[in-house]
Image 1 (cartoon, rainbow, N blue to C red):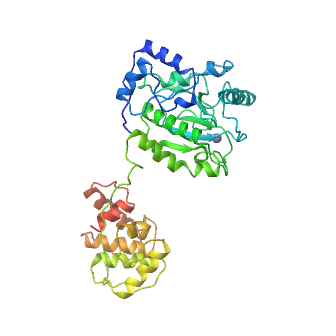
Image 2 (image 1 turned 90 degrees about the horizontal axis):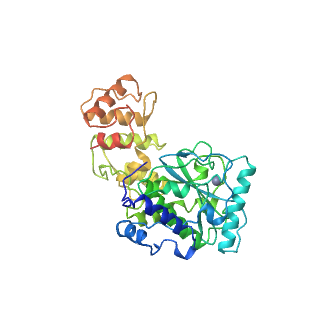
Image 3 (image 1 turned 45 degrees about the vertical axis):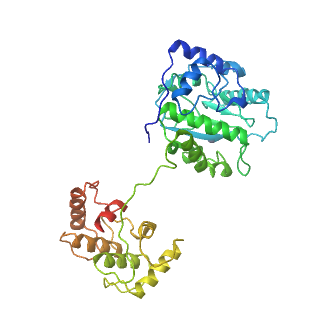
Length: 373
Ligand SMILES: [Zn+2]
């Protein structure tokens, strides 16, 4: 998903090459802090995230690519990798540059024309260009192109890859490395108009351990920290739906529907439209099974646990009886037989159209919440 975020004012092209030249002098201590060059100072005045120091291919001593590095874009996501190499305690710049050269050699050996990933972050926190032209791809801040990589089959033309030095099946990245990753991801999101939700782990797209169980489990935190840097909400809020609150003493079609749904969950109770102590006990049981506060009151959390399961054509169940009960109460002539056939599908579509919902005849949470309004 793409979202609008504050984008850098574009420095003039001539100044950009000066800027890239300055960025070639890498220093991990400067990550996240704008260098005091005139052009960067001007950018920092309007940018939420200053461009981090990224050592160029020339700086770390890359060999030329063995083929033409073509540009693609715009990127739709950022993929996080680990190198699955040793968790070195040599945090020096020299070790970082050596790592970048090694990765390029490993990737040449796979038959690739250059490093597969666009960026690399060492355990010492040094951010480096991977594939040639990756810094060029960052362009003026309004650029949407990046070099076509080779880090994840099927995703290379739509994603930017970041290799993080180390093996993170149980260990975690160093603090310096983590901070550099947060800064680089935030800058990439800002530059390319991506949101924190566009950050993924390699394993989200391929059957691989990468970036390791421990690191992968930290990706929600990475998205949160990137969101904080971007000044966006954290994480993107789920669409808010309105649900009725049902509790002991209430009655009517919503209670009847809830009772059908409780029965669908495998519990036995009488469906009579009256929320008595028997219904409350069953609600408590349902809530306990979902790890919810077991107060016997059906509110938003319980509806979305989900008690209101998604129903579609072809199903026969008590949940479908619940759908049909609500449709009937909303004025649609359907029989409450538990069979989701063409008649029920047609009624659902009419209801969805009338309420500006996607008219797909599938009763998901949005349609459910409107049916119960
Ligand atoms: Zn990977």
